[in-house]
Image (cartoon, rainbow, N blue to C red; front, top):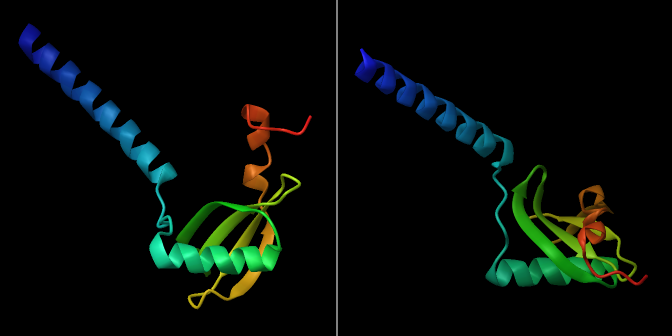
Length: 111
């Protein structure tokens, strides 16, 4: 009986671990892919032309209605997300609220 109990306990533990891993995977998974090569160059140029300043901090494809999205950190520290179509034309932009607390975690500040 002890062997059966050990096997059952090990199987139950493995199922719990597998379930947790699947939950994390689903919660963090997406169709977004970082841009590379020529796509990155073209998206960077379009986004910086739109914002007039800044540094690209993230780029991706396959998110929602936009073919490409580029996050640009402006000189004042704010971040703008620029949406581009499949021909790298700007279709919109918005403040990126997800990046608002990055400097609080030890990043460079002007204080």
